[in-house]
Length: 377
Ligand code: SF4
Image: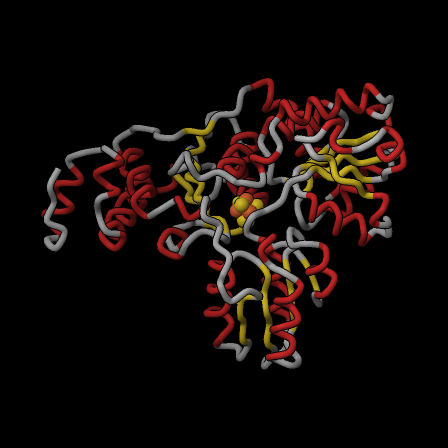
């Protein structure tokens, strides 16, 4: 289809006549604003748009609720809306489906919006790891614990094997829950959150060993596995792993008095050098609670950092990114205004596109693992 993109009415009329995603993707971002707003208004209370903190501005401005993945899933489950349009990544939409009520349908505007960290723990690899632990007689004393940033299949594995799910804000409480039930934790899929959490509880680094899913017996011996308190899955977030200890040194040298606050998905060495670490919600709260005039370098995804910089500028709080090249979550960025407009306009026409549905058997055990997380708070 040939469109004259300088002629907005022609663009709108031509694009509306088709529901092909390719047609939407050929249009400029700004031409989507009015269409998203109109479709949103027509859908009314039937639909809730959920926007993750790392989402780009052109999309998150249309969100009915913003937050981290767990907060958004909870909001979704508590609403009466039939359709949840999740502007985030795949595992988040899965969690919303697991926690959602009967009849609720979750839509991910772009199915290619995945999470590289979640993809680092395949269910077949985790099952192989567990079999290896069984083989050396250690599975019975090991509790599997997965970060929210994992597939529903991994969450279900944890639920079925006596474990649970945690977020970056309740990982410490989840560790305590697990240690009350076993000698050792198998922590999936982010080695950094696992190491940072374990160390904060007083577990020495040499008692936290890395399980490499590509190595023979995870790259460990029976003795090293038996001596471990935490078995860290060899996964990481490509965004947060880019922050380095040298970045902390550089901002401290350049801006005396600056506070460095980072997400616990960052490397251990970066977290140790920082003034505080916490989930996205906690990072926001730390800035909110700071006195006027305070400056922060924040180690998390660049869209959230930029939004915080704008939001707090009026309170005389200066915010910069810890790494001035900026760290972008490229998979989350795949949700564009065009994808959102396409999903919403199809919904207006009664078509549910890109529905995320977790299989009932997986859903059941994933819910068990998520419910246990609610127990720990
Ligand atoms: S920031 Fe990292 S952990 Fe979060 S969705 Fe992106 S890749 Fe996954």
